[in-house]
Image (cartoon, rainbow, N blue to C red; front, side, top):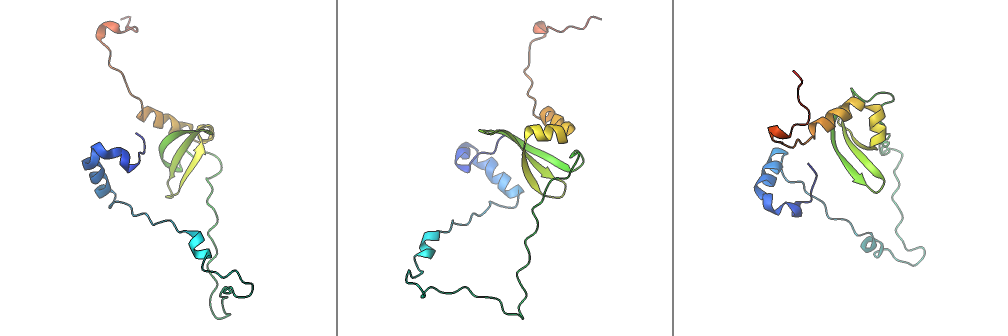
Length: 144
C-alpha cells in the first residue's frame, strides 16, 4: 500500500489503466517553466528593461490570497476523513491526512497520535497483515 511512480508499475499496466479510468483519467503535468530563458529576453542595459504594468483606478485589484488553512485546535477525531498513508522520511514518520472539508495535510505521527489517537488505531488495524499458522503451533490455547 504505497504510492509508486508510474515507471515502477510496468507489470501492472491493466490495473493502472483501470485506476486512471476510476479517477477520471490520467493526470496531465505541465512542463516546468525555464526562468533563465525568460530572463535572457530582458536587456541588461539600464533603462531599457520593460516596466511592469500597473492597474488603473477603474480596474479592480487582484483578489487577496486565501489565508493558509490550519488544522482545527483540539481533537481531530471528527474532522479527519481518512489517513492516507504514513511515510518514513529522514525527519521521522509523516502522516498524510484527508480532512472532511476536502483539504489535505501532512504531520509528524506523534502529533496525530495526540490529536486523533482513535483514527491512528483504525489506520493501523486496517493495515495489519496476519500470518497463517498451523493449528499445532498455537502457543495460546483456550483453557476450557
